[in-house]
Image: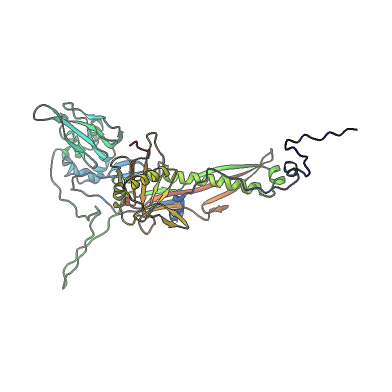
Length: 468
């Protein structure tokens, strides 16, 4: 009998069992399932989380508006702007209208519009067909100069108004051409809506025929109704009475949620639980995905996301596109006690390049054992959830945090039924006829901005490398 030895490419005969064969009988050491989608979630860690009872958090504020400064002021609620009724008294034709119900009815007829740069909103000589209130952005007034040339006669910006002559003169025409210079958010009162409300409220017609002045109400430098306080007096003078007025329509934040149904076959749960429990690992990865969605919503949700709930007066733009130290200083100076910046990693890199050009090397700060980039001692946390547009532009957020600091806070509710982690529960749904075990996983959360200056945004941040 002839025995043929296996061919060995290494020019020698193997004398021991190969590792390829041996691992068939060995109990290999395994890692837990890895997930590339897990991020650092700095925003979730940096926000102070406030317990919410009943699923709703109401932000009560002092009534804030300044009548008599020539600017119309607005309330921004989840990306939707509405004019404060009493602010319509800034329009000369409405200065003597003291009935707040009339002003409220008129304010409700304004429609929000968002226009692109270069949009013509009014053309010289055409009938005046709308009242425009500029919420955010810039408009150019184009007219004819002394020598017949086309020239820019002025600008309209946040808080300005135009077309108010229509309120008292049905034959008014546009005195100039108005064109948007930037992306602009505005409120418009069409002539048809004005005619309807004048028919519904005859008293308004009479009041529109008069133009009168109205003394400005006392207010502090922040636009809040002044609290009368006497000091430095002696004897028994008569003290002035006072009260603190509140916003009659406070913003309420209802807890949002992210949910998923986890399904595991009973055979897997019964037979393949060593060395790792299959259900626990499935739960862990699903919960990580829910937490990633939570942070994405905290940034981008149109109702409560930080990008959509920043007051328009707290939004600024970069000077030259790339984020410079000057831009960051301006963003930092818009509020007291800024606790953190939040930026896309590409924006942090772009800011680093601008610092290098100027020979600046900001020292990082240590946060829970991690060295984090900073500016003026304020940490710059990376957040990949902040979008970068096709034009390679993004935003940088700056915020003050904490309920007592009147800052930005996270909202959740602990103690819910079947709670697995704070404000997250896992509920067993049962086993179906195909032997599949189901669990419903729910995570409840939201965010709130206590006062407008708690959150600021630097927009139009260019992150692409610029050619020399």
